[in-house]
Image 1: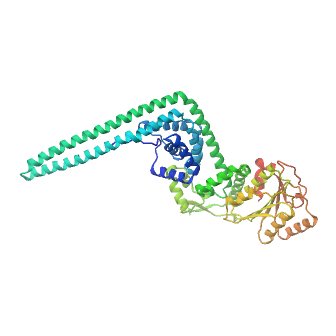
Image 2: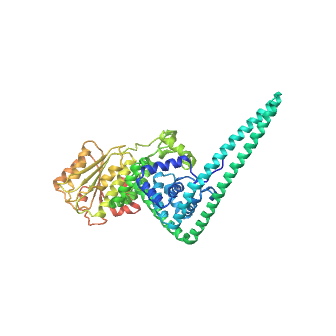
Image 3: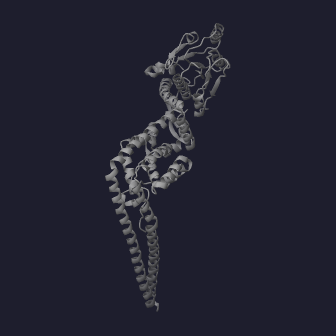
Length: 531
């Protein structure tokens, strides 16, 4: 049986194709793009699959031109141009073995390459596709039928020859007749084999002729639009890389524990990305949050490292922070990655067991966030980013966390409580989106925070504000007296970026006051180290 040419220009297996088909089934935008593309270009569906393959696969490889159908030669040229850009390896840094990131990049690249092919070329490709599906397919069918008939005749001739030889060996009086039949069967098999060979030659000649036309079309397209196409592809690749970077940073920023976003379904990730795209506020908060998150995690790692004792044993588990070096090496090896993931899920990784010098768990954290009308848009972005960064710092230590958003005395307090092991990016987005307005009232949120503490939560309070509010002497006396009975710390953060501030009131009940501007420099870890 002769090998037929293939429509995909990048090597892929059934798993790759099944995965991409599954993604298309869940991604409405990708379905719409494919339908739009097929209306203009008959080779568009395999082109999308090829783009996905070069973005997702561990070691993507383009097939030799001789293995690709004539109608797909232009696709091959486009894929080569994509892989030749300097942005390709940068984009792969985000899409490698990531189904979601790869499919999102396909949306951008697929839209761009569709517009690169001139209408006359699309029409010629349509003709080639029709010829492959019509005339050439008929030739293939005829050749296959002739080959099957020739194979069957060959089997019959062999059986007849064996029967004649056995008859002669046995002295069968019909041996001569059987030999005559064997000779006739052999002649018939040879004739049918020649017919099959001729049918395949006719098909291959027609296929070769079509391939020559495709080569001429590709050369003409390169001569007329080669550089223009490369420029457009570079632009699309840069856009895809920038989008992939933004998606990665924003998704990771909203992740509340290592790998939480990776555990989301494709639909959940897509819904989250779309939500973030529609909200300028959430995008800005995510950028600040990402910065604070990195600082918080780094600071907490320092604190934990200073408290961690010696390694006492090696055991089975899935704590990624305690992996033995050999397991880390496996994680970085493409061929071993799936086995690593399987053993991570079943908690069968080799991890260090250590003896702690003191318990890592600390008390809860309560963050009060100013939602008064004096808070500017910029100040809100900073305070939400800091509050969420503090949460992720606490979550790293598996600590109870409470957000209290406050406005005026008549405004309700917006309280979001996240207990240990109840992390959820949805709650973080709820905190980021909420805003009250109105006049400020410091006493109400501080009383609420104190209620939690007096109920048994040994918590610290982080109080974020622009400082524009007074508190009564009676409140101060009661609040500071209570702190002597049940000790707790109050760390205030003054939003001195993007608006006017005052620290006078904060000085009356705070153990320490930080300025948000200081959190944009290297010393920013100070606030994370005291919480």
